Image 1 (cartoon, rainbow, N blue to C red):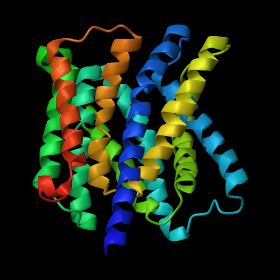
Image 2: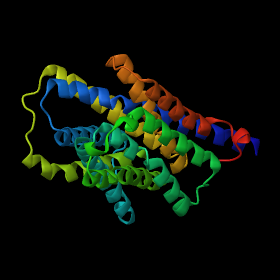
Image 3: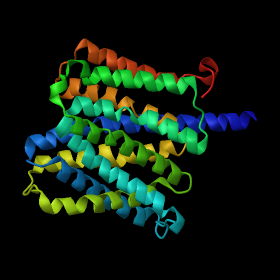
Image 4: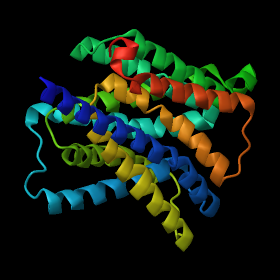
Amino acid sequence: MKKKLQQKEHRDFIGYASVLTAAAFWGASGIFVKLIDDNEAVSATALAFWRDLATFICLLLSGLVIMPGKLRIRRSDWRYLAGMGASLGAFHILYNLSILLNGAAVTTIQQAIMPAIVTLVAWYLWQEALSLRKISAILLAFAGAFLVAGLTEIKSGEFTLSGLLLGLCVPCLYAGWNLFGKKLRMQYDSLVVLVFAFGIASLLLLPIQFFIPQPWPIQPTTWLWFAGLIMLSTLSAFFLYAVGIGRLQASIASILLMSEIAFAVLYAYILLDERLVMTQILGSILVIAGVFQLLAPQRRIGGT
């Protein structure tokens, strides 16, 4: 019994560490995107496509070397894989559109709804416990995102109803690829899942590329920032998250992922010299508090 408990604690520790590290890497994606945008005239949709395509190629080559002959999915699971790839690609499109229509602040808040959706669906599908611990962590993370984004300073005329309705699709799609990914990670290696998911996402974004301008030629420094976006904020982040979600409940992993907001604020302050107001600092503290709510020992919180 004691050995099983130790194994579970070790498994949970790896899961927590993987998801939090993935969130730290995802938090840096905004830095890379800004650096790329400063060097090249590239649309958000084009960047999303080339990001997904480059990631797919890297994952496919890695899979062929590391797992030759094992990149296979049972026919009965293709619907889940198609759901994950489609929701991932659509998420990238609508996330960018939401930023254009609503601004980054509103989009951040909408994105922060994702853990609540995942928690409710996971409770319904897999009977994951819907405890006070999780609910309070979600509320803390959402309140933190609200303050970090500075939504209290936004005027109602700065966004439209159609933009908000479109933006509400963002957390649904965000939750979608999380849930489909959890389902697939129960049966397949993380590398197998990611290869097919990014392949499908790339195919979804491909037709749009014929109607938008593509950046060319590309400056050498842009290649450097793009490599950082791919290697650190995409390949490493998604792989670590796939590892983590295979060891944790989907609801817990999704809540931990909100620490990305605090990391993004920290990076912007250190690397971009962006000034933080008191509400943003308080918001970051609330997000971190929500994460620690989950990291605290169960015996002190009263269940998972």
